[in-house]
Length: 222
Image (cartoon, rainbow, N blue to C red):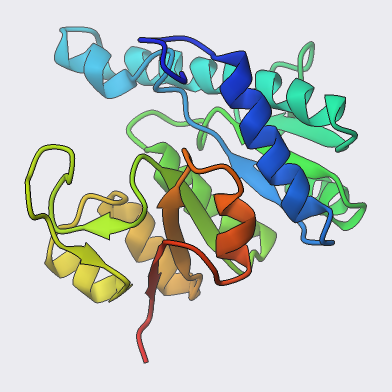
């Protein structure tokens, strides 16, 4: 959204594409799961009285719009990119096919996974963890609104404690809202560490992949 109340801010998309390009240029394979909250959030639609499943499907369609915007920005920067949707819409992107996605990554292309898991009642966080497990990813980097995991929302709670490192069990036990419990449990089961960082800081993605900058590491602990 950038500074807009809703929609797609082209400058923000361009900055994120530049960050992804930095990481890809190092020879790192990058797959992206993108949300749609800047356009429509299914959970908010359901809270307003919509049918939950229908609202979630609308949210999935919003993620496809974001994926196409990011694909365009990446390809303008010379990064070959494919969008795969969990809801087939072959006119605008590929359907999600695991082996094809893995082949794209092997060829150095960025793959953007859109439409979540393709099922209502599952979050984009769960979709990200599921795709990471399917692709055999070594790491999940969650770009969010703050520079790590806090004990409470630092924008609302003065003195909220920031964590440098947490175990999956601690995230679940403390009911920390960084990702939903299903996503955390799936990452723990598959042994995929999670780095949480601020998506608002230019260059932060490349920094955290290199172990620098501000982030919280969530893993199985020492």
